[in-house]
Length: 173
Image: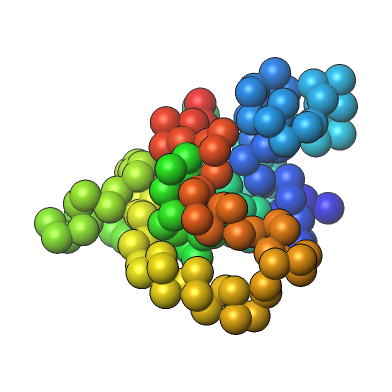
C-alpha cells in the first residue's frame, strides 16, 4: 500500500523520499543496502498522483518536515511535527499551508517560511510554528516523565530539534 491509499503509510516520509545514499538514512540507521525496501521513487509518486488525480500531496506524522517538487509534475509536502522541533537547534514545529497561488503568506508570517513552491495554481508553504517551548516541556513532563517510552523517544527532540536534519536538508531534490 502507498500513502495515497493508507493513512498509516510511511512511503512518503523524508527517509523514503531521499536517495538511498543520503546522509539522513545513515543518521537513522537505514543501510543503503536496504534501499529498495525503504525508498519511494519519483516514478512511484507520479504514478500514485496520477491514479489519485492529485497534483499535490500533503502528509504528516512522519516526524521530519520536508517539501519535494518532482520534475515532470507533483509536489509532496510533509509538516513532520507541529509540536516538536523539526530542525537542528530548533524546538519549533512546522505546518503546511496550501493557498491559491496569488495568495502570498501574510507579511507578518514571512519570517516563518521554511520552504515554498507554486504548483498548478496553488502556493504550498512549509511554515515554522513558534510556541512557548518551556511551557510545552513542562506539560510534556507532567504526562511523560523520565523513564517513560515517550520521554526516551521525544524529550531531546522537544528541547533541541533533530540534530541531523536542518532547513536546507528539508528541501529534498
